[in-house]
Amino acid sequence: MTDDQRPDLGAEDEKLITLARASRARTGAAEGAAVRDETGRTYTAATVALPSLRLTALQAAAAAAVSSEADALEAAVVVGEGAELSADDLAVAADLKTPLVVLAAPDGTPTAVTRS
Image 1 (tube, rainbow, N blue to C red):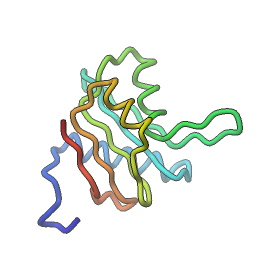
Image 2 (image 1 turned 180 degrees about the horizontal axis):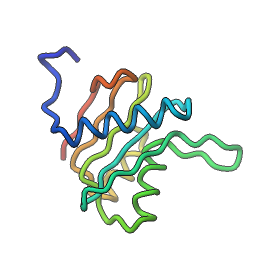
Image 3 (image 1 turned 60 degrees about the horizontal axis):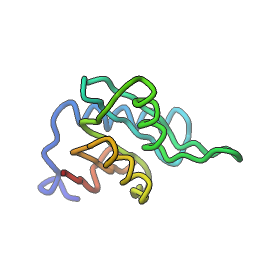
Image 4 (image 1 turned 90 degrees about the horizontal axis):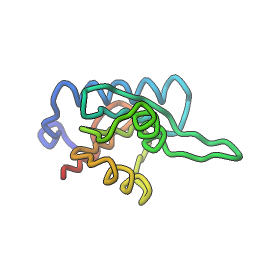
């Protein structure tokens, strides 16, 4: 995505990219994610890859939000090298009525934006 194709993301959405990048960098995980709930609270997570538990970064961030009583997400960002949303990620986004999902490269450049 070139600069002239870069989606028009607001400051709060750019903040989510920064938080997702930091989560990924801090843990050294394949992906980092950040979500914002309907009240504006943010949650971050990284890929969970344990022998007994596997969660994508988006699933882990959504679980953190739901466990803190979020009913919906305003936006979600996933950062990673070649990050893609799995069918399970799409289902989580749909469950939480997420109108904006952004995929971004490790440098924070958006590679895909889904609006519903």
